[in-house]
Length: 547
Image 1 (cartoon, rainbow, N blue to C red):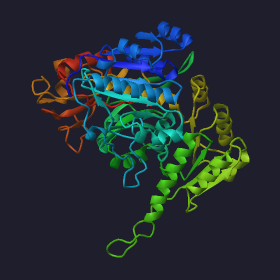
Image 2: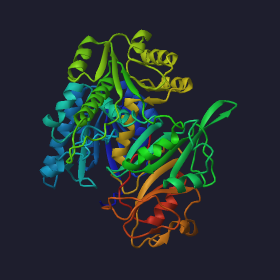
Image 3: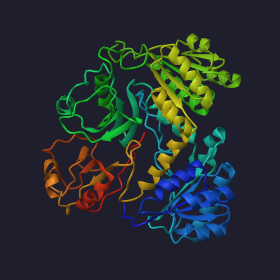
Image 4: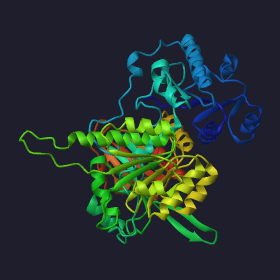
């Protein structure tokens, strides 16, 4: 990938998602953002709050798109509240760019899509950042990158499922589907609160909250990481002060002792994560929840339920299967699955999607404690709540009365997030915020030098670098990095010998950086200019790290 000096992004629609994406991207010196909005009030607001180029008018006006320099644009986001406007805007842009491009339209292989569903039953299903495909669709253009990626927000779930067939060069964004995929990766491990794929199928970044009764409590990082061969990237700890609790994020030293409820991030392969995860759960407690209860009528709730049903069906298909020697395979772990839903039509659809009857479906109010008790909500239950924001809070409080200890809430109101945090629930998922995060990710990964916030922090980032043969780092041991100008507060959390390497190592100070090796580094944002200069030209292999 070439080293792009300036990335051009056009966003149509200054709603909550579009405005937030523009605000984040406009702070990056390597990105030029243009925001188009037709609404008078929103247009005035965007001019007052966003530090980027703003244009008042319709995203369906070719003259305004010309004014926004669409022919040299790298990414186009149509984020209005109307599906038809977003898709028509993408179609209009496609026709304008292809007609005026000096490069012929891209070949069919650039539009190929990879299936997300794995053949095994690993509960951590890879999560595509946006839409359904891991490989993004694009058209060739006269931009600096030579490619133009078209993204359209779609609010109608049924229509969303057909967009890829009807609009073959558009990447559809359905916030609720993005949210359900994220949640689906976290449900089956008690202490997990975040997971991000660094290298497809090979390396992930996991967020774990240390249980108070975990054997890891009181251990130093030096002893723990030596025993389990992982590198702790950051630790977040809540500190009490005169103004209440604050969340302090740090890159820990080797002598740092882990405490109860610390939130830690570490890199590991999916195969080793289950083994490592058990050390952060309560000593002697089952690491997986005994039951999963999903409540609510939202697309997120229904999609997560269907994913769980499909996973249970795969497990059922393996039950009693005989191997080549005629012996039965070990029985997979069985977990109870229940859905409480007030919409009668959706309840019928849920029952039809589970022909084997592996799940319990209750058609009734989610704020009726009797319905929660009927499906067995209790201490060993993981509860996912996704309905209206007010019903979510009431349901979560009722579940706590029944002894439920792990409650995940889908929240659509930003002003409720602080309240939910104060009430001490385990996870908050915002479809809009996750979409903002992933749109920023899709943008910055196109750069040769990228920047992202770490776990909601404004101070830390994680970046991936490829070692150039002319870099002063080539053939240098990791423990010697500080001697040539590396900041003191950093951590190398994972490394691979080259981009095609199918394995990774948890690095130690004695490991040598060789030509073409890939390293993932976490450091303060203000220190990365030093690291960037030492590595020289860097390939864009960055992945988002944010909950």
